[in-house]
Length: 290
Ligand code: ZN
Image (cartoon, rainbow, N blue to C red; front, side):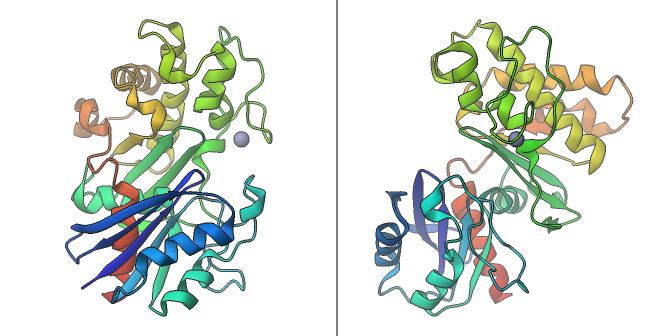
């Protein structure tokens, strides 16, 4: 079985071909420019391949309702050239194979649940913390879409009093997760990129405090069994123990489960990095064949 996969991101596109066991046979990437030229590069990668199915793991927001006339379109993205772009339709018409689409983070959650950090579990949240914050949720074995798709990055958070940033960087909300804890929020707050923040800078504890609130929301609402934190900001590995500590404090001893005794597993980095999304796309394709 040959499965095509595309991880469509705001800054780059990653294309791949996998076998049915999710072995990546070939992959390539190109920067995300204007839709027309970018699509040309993407389709050139797949040219001549005898694919059985194709899976697309896309940045959002996207229309993921199969009954919708604009199913598979990117919707109101700040990347204006891509707004309303029919991503699924363009690829399906060019490749002439069955195509599946979901958010990049849902695809990553699926991949981690089948082959990675949440292997064997039916419930996990994959959260990416970088230029933006997004979350993909697998609940009782199914990827959650709901009305549109969950927007973990725009959860309202409690702002900490010692935070010098009085207004988050999200243009839509004063104090959502993306506004207070994304890479750009750190850059605005401390006047330097997160990657240059010294290890002992108080900004890391503040960051952990905000991300812990998102984790708490996942634990209290959908009672997730695993929270996988990926994305550029999470490359700072010292964040993990800090987040776990804040989560423990915020739980206040209320939840009781053996899983909470193993916080290192409960809140962890992705196993499949940097291929969670790419493998997730291939899994979406494989699901079409099953
Ligand atoms: Zn927001």
